[in-house]
Length: 303
Image (tube, rainbow, N blue to C red; front, side, top):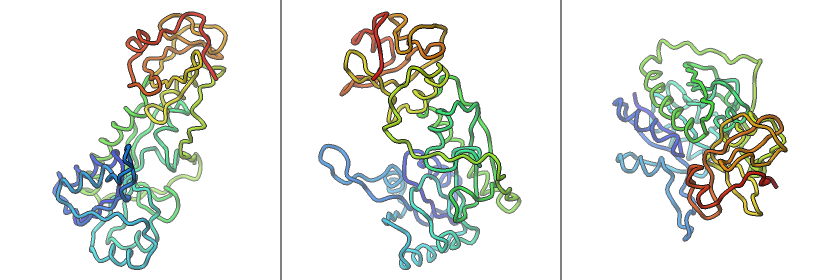
């Protein structure tokens, strides 16, 4: 098929590679414009732009698709279908209507649960037992279109957003190739009106750990925010980023270290921190971290 690909972050790259590998003709790749990054604040291409250029594909990165000339240029590509995954811009109706078979979105949740910007983070933070990928026909609403293909996967008890992100990216890449192969035979399934939730964009103000919450919730909070933006707590006045956790047996005043292995009491139960990071330092597994920054039994964490 003649495909327009629309994506921006690292999550989208395996999908682009899968489309090329499956032999589809990628007429053009759309992504967000390069943004200032690094110490010099020089414009840095997005992961999708970098990979598309390495593959020799044409790239466009308009600031918006609202202008008539942008919509005309999009339509002039004569695509059979557009594949959209974490693109980051609203698609006007003229763009949605331009490809002969419409626009297909790869969404990292089991719709209608977790429509919106941060479905992977929110699924883990909410303690969901499973999530998955939906291949959806796009329409004007936010992730409201009918689903063509869906597949569920369990969320591991110690899985972080980073690990689940990579698994779902690979799943989406495999599923979109299947969806395009089966497109004439797939029946769009309208989303149910019950069970709708919205995955609001993650705000750094959410990142402080509340040790008074039950251990399951504290673990989910830490894992859901790992690796970015990273949950944090204070220890001896220093802000520590917590990037991995598991629920363990233990009891004590919330925020109190129960041993020297980074086990911390919660409102009910306890968690053991498995990965952490000091300001300006690299993230480390707990054993390595504690050699350079001991947490003693009875120490208080919080802030």
